[in-house]
Length: 430
Image 1 (tube, rainbow, N blue to C red):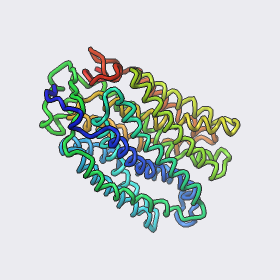
Image 2: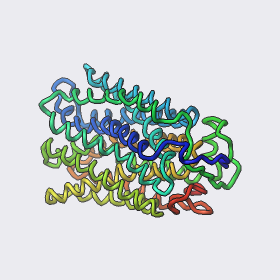
Image 3: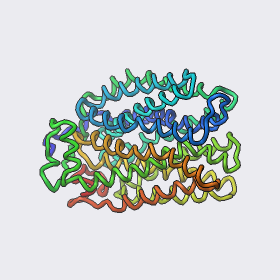
Image 4: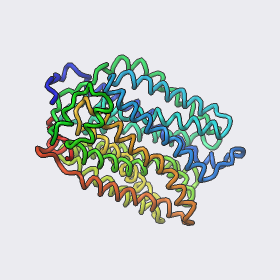
């Protein structure tokens, strides 16, 4: 049990922490969705001979670096505080995006996307943990959810920039904007505390001694706690749910514009659907977070997965354009918004000394879904000769995610996810 309560004034203030987290994840969202925005331009490249399978491979290479970044950053954040790993990750991301912009051939471009994936994977658990520790307990989901909408806002910016500049400009120009994170490094050193602390002490209830192991046990000790009696069931379910969510997120980020082109829309129109997708994620995540703070985090997360499945089915059918844009927005919440809720659930269910590792391993193991997602969508679109196939491919992981979240059960005394305005007293699932 954490026996050292922390006064709220001793930690970072929620407002500035949410703002910084939102800006960082906005930049990360740009880097994440840029491959989807330039996908049609890559397919039309006169020299690189990019096919649909190649595009799926590029998306998977980006995702392949993410588990390494997530697990390493989650451990480093718990061991050394959030500040240093966050600053290093921002610098790493900037350099990799610059290398993508100057890549002269497809092989070098693919290598830079793998390295970029490591930076993307590192920042999400670090930012989520940092904002979670600054959040007011009664508004925990809202604060963390608002920060994580930065991913979707970054996707909107990518869509707007892509619609404005493509195909007239060389697609590699869009990667030059990725050097912006360098400007945030001094801001991180000024705002992010060196030591990770909760605004209010969290005292998780466990079913065995493993979860009471001290933080000094290091990464292996923290992993043993996650797989011990008090956290094992929820850990495995969170890993599997994150896998399902990231299949949707990274499949959509790579393939949505190309799928809309295959369905008969021009590039400009397909990017409008991508913008609607991300706008829906922003609005939906904030709305769902407000509901979650009223004691319905599990219900909101389960509903999000269900909405993703329904929205993709609607997008596969000929409908009036306004309805398709609305369905794209709902799909955005069901993908990005729902994964944000899963991350909030994980953060809400662990104390400060374990939170970074829990998020890092959840996202790290779940990144297998991010790796598989783009190639999974590519395989479906290649093997099944139908413009609807890619949309229906999203339904399977959405339904699976809903089932996995439904299997979570509350701890013996309930959780902060179910009782607003309180610190966690138990793991979210036992």
